[in-house]
Amino acid sequence: MGITLKQAFDLFIFDRETYCKKNTIQNYKNTLSYFFDFIENDRGCSIDRIPLDSITTLDLKAYVASLRTRNKLETHPLKPTVNHPITKRSIRTYSVDLRTFFHFLYYNEYMEKDIMKGFKIIKSENKLVLPIFDGEASQIDSLFNLKTYRGFRNYCIVHLMLDEGLRSGDVLNLTVRSINFDESYIMILNGKGDKDRIVPLAKRLRQPLYKYITFFRPHTTQHDFLFCSMQDPEEPLTHNAIKSLFSRIRKETGITRLKPHLLRHTFATSFILGGGDMESLRLYLGHSSYDTTQTYLHLANTYERMGSDVYKLDGIFFRSYYSRPGSSGYSYRTNQKL
Image (cartoon, rainbow, N blue to C red; front, side, top):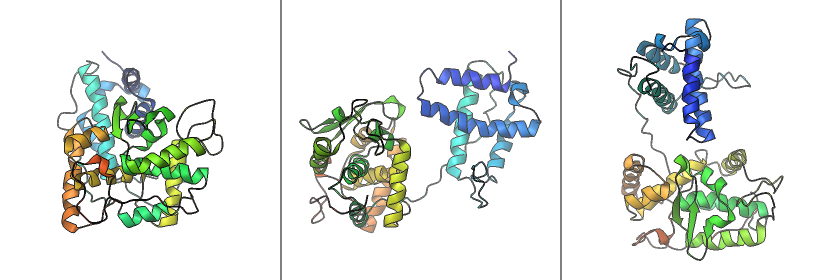
């Protein structure tokens, strides 16, 4: 069956649209477009004129080699002149998506040869990622004015990631009914990979969340999402709003490594430090396998040996809580900025 690279791409996307989320589809389109750009420049014609069976393993290797010298900002609309090479993690992501694409084509018999044989995926970088420490958590909390809607909303957003291990997407998808105060749990529906899960509601978050819902959350008629836009309460909060919030926190605190996922990372590391078991952590984080969860075990062991004061979770997550003095006490702070 002789089809073009463009037709092959369309078949792949049509297949993924039957079960993947829109964000996943868009990610495939973005990452595969880099390979298509490379092939078009190499062949001097568009992918709707390039036969699929003309693509070889050498093309894949040449593409990855080109990524190593590519400026990750070269497609930026402002055309910055600063050269930031693509990270190994990004190259790995692009390569994994490429492998998924060509495996789909081979196993559905759209191409005769499995060109992924002999194509090695670059290994992940094992960089040490520092979690949030107690002092840094206090510094972040000091920014929130808990007498205002904005401050209370932002406090709850941050601590749902830090104290519950939620992804930013999980937070955005929460509804008022997601929080069960009577049974002390949070229901996360349609998380990453369309998985549902339940996490215990930390005692320290019960009052702030209840107070936010009762006194601060705007009355809306268009949706029942937990968090609303500041500009228009009838619209739910967006990913861009989360990015802007964390950008302001980084600027105000000087904690340059702070990102939404770092709070989830801190939750996982602290969970292990507090004596939590791996199976519970896997379920709370919504991981499909232990491969990802296992990385936190090594990190927790490292920080335990260092005696680092990693942010401590609520005792509700553990049978035996942290042994350090004063670890179980916590109070949320009131101040004035975010």
